[in-house]
Length: 336
Image (spheres, rainbow, N blue to C red):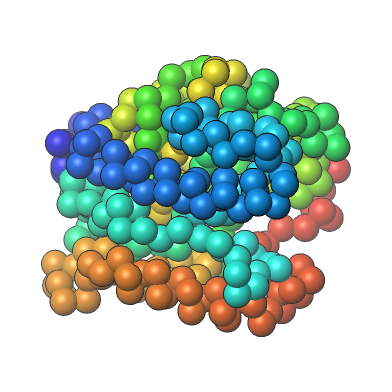
């Protein structure tokens, strides 16, 4: 597996705001155990929905992708929270699900991945809690929402800098995106605007329809603020990763295939810099100066998120009135 980036790859990242790197994560050692772990999560979800009468079959004979698609389609609901290693910003209770299993944790702390990250951030690396798993079934198999769009579709234009609060404006936050399965263009990979990271943080509009009805209701950057026509798709095979600057404008394509698109969306920054999501727990993923501070215990990681869930259960029960997780409103002139 490839580790540290070459000088040419670092130059590419600095110029274009991203780099796609093949063969960083060993599929058999790192990705297959994650898939097996999530199959157990899906077992429990299927049992709950079947017993509640929301689905008429547990679909236990189907592989993960087919099974999750059938369950989402029949229940008419998105169940991504049961797979996610994060929490909602509001309405959390003591039973809100999340998943922080050991196979997932091993991906966060994989040495080859951290070698690549160190090439851009240096040797003191913090796992930033802005992190999600993305399970995107084929659009043609999904129910529609009130706007007539699939309940999970393409992702609107944004910068990852735009999803954190102002405390992280100077943080060197790096996005790490990788699929658990081969992700060609038809599965809906990232689409990136090369060299869009050199300017300022662009306005993200909360209620905006100027980019098309398929993005109605999504937080997004109006296309008249950047060169949307210059975007390129980034298909990635299993084991590959995309490393991206926090100001690089990107979104994702729709999944028009017959299979799920399944990916991890992680963030890292130099240790000591604000994460932009202070209520959520991060951890030291690598430290050359203080290796004893590195977290290598998946159970401890789970404990950190359990404590956070208990804390969140006491705030933001009716929206983000107690603590804000974002910075945007509907009043900006760019959103008119």
